[in-house]
Amino acid sequence: MPLLSSHILVRTHAFSLLTVAYYLLTAPHTLLSSAPIWLLGEAMSIRPAEFAPEHLTINKPQPKAFRPPALTAARAQPPAPAVPGTESERELFALLALVLLVYAIGQFLFAGDLAVVLASSSPTPAQGKPSSPSKSSSRLGEELHTLLSAQSRWLTLAGLHVLGAALFVFWIYAFHSHALFGSDNAIFPSALRLANRVTFTAGLADMLFWGYLWTVLKEEGRWVGSMLARRREIEDEDEKYGM
Image (cartoon, rainbow, N blue to C red; front, side, top):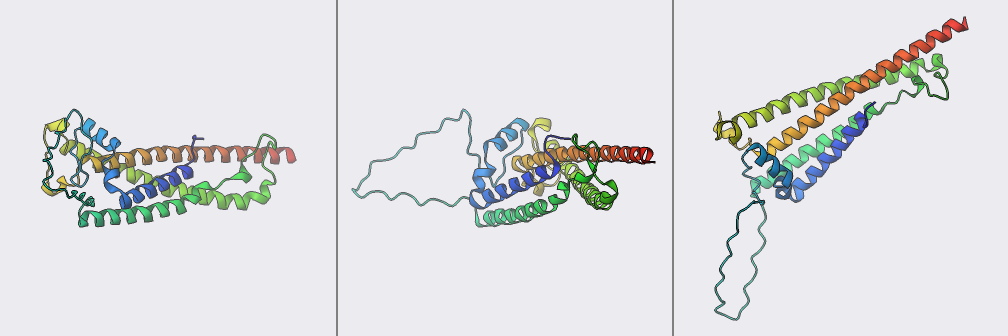
């Protein structure tokens, strides 16, 4: 069995989406201009996003601002803090946060089917064999159908996520990165706003998570198969020696 089960991974991912949605509502530019996004974008030579101004600079001396002496004794009023982002950007962040919120709630709820424990079919060292297999066969069938159906659904979803995210990440790196061609080579100029280091980081993180979840689900499926094989062996031995 893997170190973390699939339902724990899915619910952890759901909580991560809720955290991202919170930051998109409260401090979007702090999230979108964070150090991991900046480092990955610089390493892969991907342009920054227009809606996420770069606050991190390296080896760029900041000029000292010259302030003339005050001509009057009145104190200069401090400028009002500007609200980051335009109205359309704030609406976009709020809509994206709502989508992430709904998606995270759906993941959290539907991940419960992956937590089905086939306790009646797995012998413990103290028992040596499952107790009352004839009485628990119907219960085992229901649990097994629920678990295998959930694993099949999540495997399909994980495969689609990995495929879509991999194509998206490759598209950004191949056609909008300075590392390969030295400049942006956009097939469609309007797609230039979508191809940036923020979306590249989000796509790469999505691909890595769902790829790891896919391997965990496959491992759990093999574990269920081996567990059922052991159960059949125990039942065959009981029928053999019981006769």
